[in-house]
Image (spheres, rainbow, N blue to C red):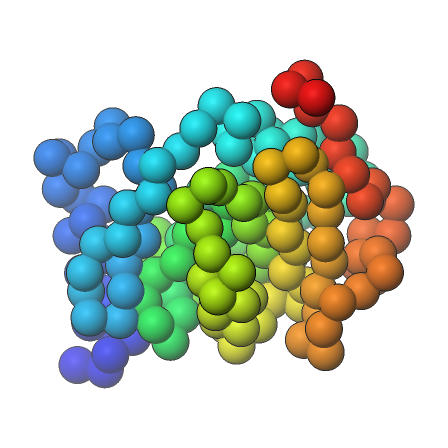
Length: 168
């Protein structure tokens, strides 16, 4: 069994494990099959919602999704928000994206480190993402392609550099 198939099988076991349902954590799986748990806050969830809402308003032909599991070379990582083309979404047969959606977005939490974001960004690009976005806790956005930081998104040029929140 290949490592990718082994990770997909382990991810399916995570999804089917009733003791992991309704935990107040984002669950990911590293390359050794170990669970990675990250706490989720109200602010974090609200920023995810705002980003997904903006994507839905600005783009057509796909879906703005929250908590998107993506098979990477280092296990299953979960993008906070992603934009997947409709055809891509329906072509995926598993409960995990084996090819990353076009846009993957990470929202900063207190528990995140810069190194973690650099690693995730690289994993998403290696898995096929065209752009990776980061949103800080104040709603400020940064956009990246595989070559580095962008002035604005090349895929969604109208996306704001800062999303407003009820917390400001």
